[in-house]
Amino acid sequence: MFNLGMQELILILIIALVVFGPAKLPELGRALGKSIKEFKSATTEMKEDVQKAVTLENTQKEQPKN
Image (tube, rainbow, N blue to C red; front, side, top):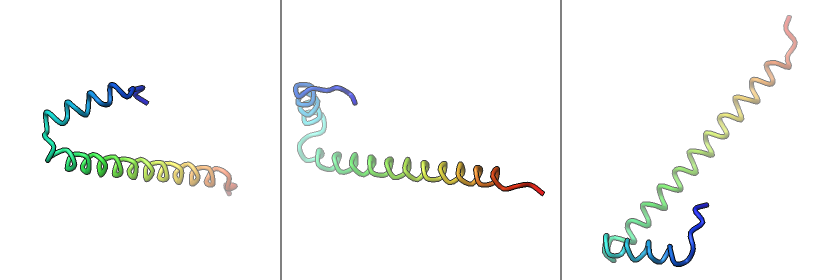
């Protein structure tokens, strides 16, 4: 996705450790994980809504008009 190597990840982790400190990192990790989980859930929900709308539209087009 971002094409980061091991050296770049280590550098990012060291900078985060210096900036936030060792006590704050687990809390930030949990918050980031929850945010990613909520984002995935919202995108899945949106996909399902779009799929339902497309299916409904297709079924309405297929019904013969009187």
